[in-house]
Image 1: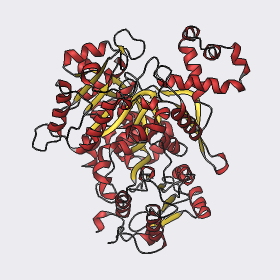
Image 2: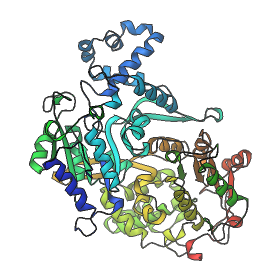
Image 3: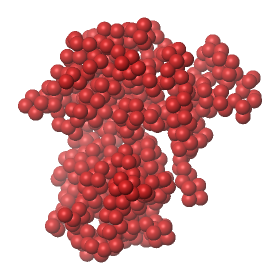
Image 4: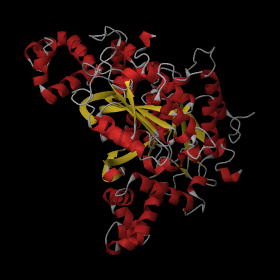
Amino acid sequence: MDPLPSWNDGATKEAIISYVQDVTNINSPNFIDVNDRIATFDNDGTLWSEQPVYFQFFFAIDRVKSLAADHPEWKNEQPFKAVLENNMEDLKKQGMKGLIEIIMTTHAGMTTDEFEAIVKNWITTAEHPVKKRKFTEMVFQPMLELLEYLRANEFKTFIVSGGGIEFMRPWTEQVYGIPKDQVVGSSIQTEYDYNNGNPVIKRLAKIDFIDDKEGKPIGINRFIGKKPVFAAGNSDGDLQMLRWTDANEHKSFQLYIHHTDSIREWAYDRKSHIGTFDKGLDEAQEKGWTLVDMERDWKVVYPFEL
Amino acid sequence: MDPLPSWNDGATKEAIISYVQDVTNINSPNFIDVNDRIATFDNDGTLWSEQPVYFQFFFAIDRVKSLAADHPEWKNEQPFKAVLENNMEDLKKQGMKGLIEIIMTTHAGMTTDEFEAIVKNWITTAEHPVKKRKFTEMVFQPMLELLEYLRANEFKTFIVSGGGIEFMRPWTEQVYGIPKDQVVGSSIQTEYDYNNGNPVIKRLAKIDFIDDKEGKPIGINRFIGKKPVFAAGNSDGDLQMLRWTDANEHKSFQLYIHHTDSIREWAYDRKSHIGTFDKGLDEAQEKGWTLVDMERDWKVVYPFEL
């Protein structure tokens, strides 16, 4: 029985399997106790695609459009004007300030329960503008198999993503088999309101935590409390997480996904604005971390190709 | 086979068992899917004792004393002078400001790995000043059985405590069977340092999050992402967590421990400075939540009585 049927035979697949067999073999000097088998996965570009922009940004755009009826003033107000006119050039000119305004307007001001319902509704209906597929169909089949393979070997699998924690949680259980309490992500501040006996948690328009770069080891320490032994990422934003895993006293495994497949997915690395993979690519080669060449190593990319 | 042998027969034990049997019975209208069986437990006063002061405070005191050799100035400087002289009256006069200074001095300024080693060393050697027992011997046997019983019924058990998250994690796995990533607590801020290729996380002398009162539902939402169906506490600091659990759409269970046993443990409630139980006691009676009368309901309190 091949535990990774969508991975082509070769050095990458062998490296994964031989690591797992080694650290789960009680007679090996590298054996790792079940409690310490922590595996962390970036999400955007690692478990699903992230081009032409992070999928959460499409969610924000769609949300602006569906809120626009209640905000006639947005027709003349940036950054909303650019969104409503689908003017990406103008939108880019709004910079980080504009982006944050869009995120806060679309992600805050409701209760956590309301936001979950909004995300669930969007994720089950929205389509990717290029691939014309549901976003949850654009997860990577080989990575689903890897998650499953690790769990079958009693690894506890976590997501550690720069994406919004409450944007991911509504669907990670169903799509990745990863429960909500094993999702670490960026967050905004919240407030508890007793609400006359019907308590709610309100989402505030203030950033709480950015789970990217140095934030990833910080988030891992805060939410998991242990160094991972296995970590997978695809960009420079994951480098600190992979280094943190590499510092584990147990034998550890670093997996970097290189987007090399312009036909089935996208090809990008050092110069891409989304998922920049430059320092990480150098360091992976230098340290001998495992690099997935998507075009070479993956028999299929998406589940719908099966 | 009695799943709760240290609980006396009676209404409290019956309420727990009939709840668990009901919500795990697939033919019951109250059946709860395994993924939603989230159970949260306060720690101080709920899973172990908390008198005459929170055990973490003894840790801080011992830590001041062991650091004093490097700080000769502490002999004349409050709040350290009071600690070194065992002068509790003077110490109380230092108020919250003094307490925070003690906590920051003893809990910050080292790496997370160093702090874990310090806690592990203390918890395996220090003794309670009154009971002359290791602190981890002062956990409640009936609650250990309850944790085990819930897990046997596929509940996922979490600690949600006002205590320091990094003070608890080094020993919760061994003592309660609760892994580090299922511990929610108060925290200080941290900083990632690449440290020339030997990355560490440093503990900073700044409060990050207080996991008490309104902080408990906030912490539950942040770390777990789901409302619990079962929650246990013992003080007014747990009231918001119990209300949050009570707001679950599934059938839920609220357990409040009333410290009524002045012989085997301690008896205190409305007027106690530690573990004040006043509003919570009223609300438990009003809403029909389950109240544990420690003296009446528990055959033994501590494991060493077995």
